[in-house]
Length: 469
Ligand code: PMP
Image (cartoon, rainbow, N blue to C red; front, side, top):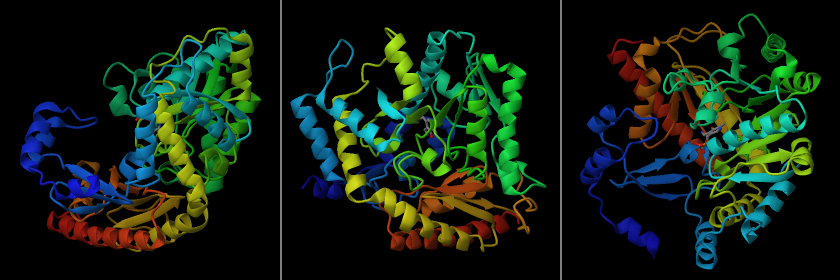
């Protein structure tokens, strides 16, 4: 009944847009530009589809913001949330107290995570989780009697959140330019971006080469100054950058050699996105800490956290005393109840296996097919993330395509055609990316690909009329 009511409700889109631009400062948005255009008002979701206030149906190729893994419209999650709110909407976990959903979720996460993880620290977002990482690894080295180990090494074009520490760990120049970032003790190395940096090497050679930048940086800083290395198994917001298979094992070897903690930021890659519960499993590395958020609740309510491996956990527990860190909503019972039901769905519907065996390979084949389009230089995928590069002229390899002038913002032009024609893709420069809900079927992948191809055609016509191709 509530769903029917939502469907029948008529929305005054223009009035909503006026109020939106009068009062709502959106994240990562040019407000003057948005005011001219007006925000699209999303009102309902079901499965992989969204509806806007004008009644248009859209395929959500981005799972909201890489998070709605179980798809929209899961009434069992809303019921779990409702029941928890009726029973105990909130209690903290600070002063020797706990709540049933938080205990159950911590236990389930320890079961799902790789074997070295028995403990979890809860937050409400990925950014808070990465702030927790910074404080936790520095605390760890204090307790280990090496307080000078302060520096955390990250990568350029990484995304680790928008708080002071999260944005500092991230390697986005545009973010560092606002607010005096990065904070001290965070440095960056190059990213394992074969298409951009691997000219003259095979992918396997480039993977080792890019991992070598970590060793160089460690030696430059002095190994006894370095606390940790952090990276996303597949860089998400940076543009779905899938590293060569040689990269992560070499990173792990280098971290071990210098006794440096390895942190896997799995805010996007966790909970089935790559066809494994955690992306580090696909990359065959054993990190010491894992950051998670998003897919743990499929975004139905905010929840994030840090999975703490035995090396750090034992030290914090046995030597640590108070760890003076935490949030009001650490282990929020309603968020934990949502996560428990969401994870039950992922397990019972075997969605992670489905990505590995069925929909992931189908998306890979589909994107390989899209690479035949005259605008597409190359396409790649990993599990249920995929990206394709828009180029001015195709080449024989990823290194000899002719690119568009970035000033023409071709990716944004293409994204506009997608948005107007019922499919949401994200543009990162001229790279178009998707990360659909894990419930997407093979038929729906075909439907999405058909629309993408149509929109690529529309983009090509548009670029011709602007004289850009
Ligand atoms: N880490 C990664 C890898 C992310 O992709 C994100 C968000 N896109 C974050 C951290 C930050 O998470 P949040 O937006 O929940 O703070």
